[in-house]
Amino acid sequence: MYDKNTKKDWLAATVTAGVGAGIPAYIAVTQGQNPLLALGITGFAIVTALLIDHYL
Image (cartoon, rainbow, N blue to C red; front, side, top):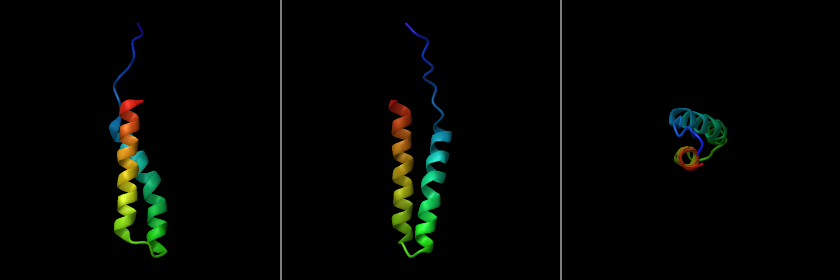
């Protein structure tokens, strides 16, 4: 009925989530957090953003 634009911008969602989660993760690493845990948190944020962008 409506002309729904289904084209998603996955690159923008990836960059936004990566920067949004990467900055606090970087600060946490400088205060002693494990860098692999910080990368895991950032990766989880990116995957979550892509799933939300795809399904909503």
